[in-house]
Length: 291
Length: 279
Image (tube, each protein chain N blue to C red):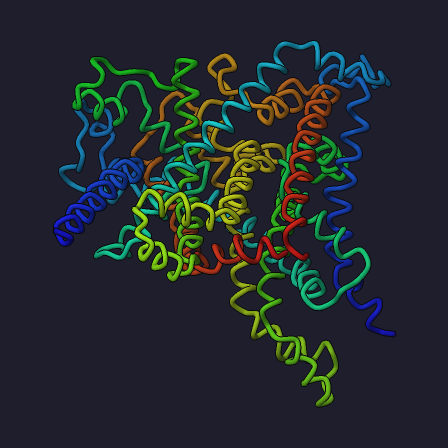
């Protein structure tokens, strides 16, 4: 009898905490999205406006360009991390001297806090004294220094590179642990059958890696979609709005303009987009594994 | 013939790895090198790869000089340490229940835990800000600690559930047969065995607290209360940035994470991939 309620006793503190700090505020966000409220214009008061904020959002070109920017940001960064991570992991999966040193050095970006990394990169990208310009000039790739964070396209690319830099080590390490889990017999059998390296890669390595690959890329997509720290410190969404993803846009609406209504509308939209994605993620895994 | 192609393959691997590492570690190298330069050295062109003489004094200057970096550093320690403790306090019992019992609502609880991991804190920041303000908690560590813990907790539960599931159930059952109460057997047997797992989860939460920007940015506006993330992004927003001191501050901020991370890295990857999928 005692056992029946015991698990609930154990999870209760966490559940209450999450209800108070996560679930309840989210409900309030949904509620706020139906109201007009601007904190710095208190004389306008708080007024129920129904779905008006969402209509405003959908009609707003800024929302659509921010959504598009978020998609490009997520896809390009995750693609880069995955491709580079996978290639390096495959290389490191061989047995050779100094492999341990390489594997340790690779972790350095991972231990760098995102905010700190963005500050380092700001200095690297610096238009006047930055090391990146110096190296590219020495290599003969550019003639004069470029202000990387001062132009829209270069700032976007610069932010993507910063984000990739932070994320690549995770990818390498996860892929590597996945590769090491592939039974050696499979490779030996392939060898006996006379398969070449390309065939082995596509017929054995990649299919065997699939579960790890899915977990890693989906986590990476979520993290990248949500990334705030790097963009905020590097560009604050600028120049103009070249790096303004949905999360940055939401934050600016709420805490730049103090427009609680529109800020919440952006937040709800972002939340729904991610919820759809997480449900998809949950189903994909619970179909296969007994949970 | 065979040996030759192996040799080519091996040298190619090394060449690619060295080029890759040079690019990957370039910013880290720039950080270290700049942190030892003089102010004039930082603004010199062409820049030096390695400064002529090492200005170790930069580290002392950033720590107690104009930037007074020891203050945000201590603030971050308090915030991150509390996030670690709070998430463990709430997360360990929950993870234990998930690893030991089948109960109605288990799946829902797991899903909610996973779902929280998926969205950005920005989604609940506005109401949380209002609550924090109405309770007079603006410019307190408490607000940041609570906010960040809510997002560290799911990860702690996730990692710990995986770890605890690997500890055989027979152990505490045997202890209970021997007359131990459940709580005593938990305290005497499970906690010590789960030590490394608890440490890993706690350190992970600590690192999340150490990296927090969004909650501090929203809840803290006094320089005295700012953690390193907020302080450093304020410093680089100013007109004159003393990059040599900023880079010394960067090195100082990385060190605690690097030390802790080296301890948990192996388990973290296991927990994120295998344990994670198993839930």
